[in-house]
Image (cartoon, each protein chain N blue to C red):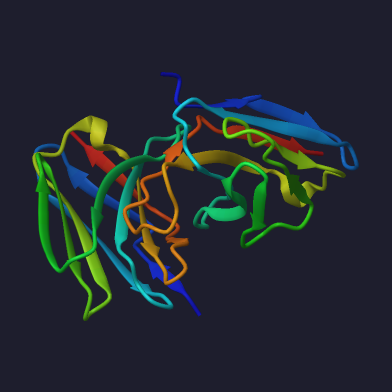
Amino acid sequence: NAGVTQTPKFQVLKTGQSMTLQCAQDMNHEYMSWYRQDPGMGLRLIHYSVGAGITDQGEVPNGYNVSRSTTEDFPLRLLSAAPSQTSVYFCASSSAMGSGANVLTFGAGSRLTVL
Amino acid sequence: GQNIDQPTEMTATEGAIVQINCTYQTSGFNGLFWYQQHAGEAPTFLSYNVLDGLEEKGRFSSFLSRSKGYSYLLLKELQMKDSASYLCAAVDSNYQLIWGAGTKLIIKP
């Protein structure tokens, strides 16, 4: 099993450019999410999905869009990149939400720099 | 508001024992996670506690006190490979994770 696969691993953008971070999981997990990780701060939830066709906003959704057309894929779109979006992005999935023991499996991360 | 506090950095010696503390304030509580994150890598699951007490898993143990809003991760017989950040995360009433900023553990020979 590949687990959670994120691409690209590294990306440099100019302000105003758009891009999509890809995330795919092969564990048949219903719950998928995107986090950003910045120095000195905890992981912050951007968007999440509890199943195909369902998405919801997390703590820091502004500037990001998501869609969930299949169980496996959960891409994150930056429509007009800003320097404040420079960060490391993690996609994570789990078998269910609504359970305390909701162990997340993380992708390897995507390091994005916006100039 | 919701908040997780843990020390920013700790240093310990190879072969020793270290305790990493975490205090939390959340709207409701449905358990507490510890994850390990090596530099440049993804977080990986270490433990989950929802009941008071100590849970042991090999060299790692995790403790929870719900009445005090407090948890700790205990690492025994420290090895150089234990150098990493340790992330504490509490589950709130909506089953959302509230993450601490992480504790960077430095192991010295």
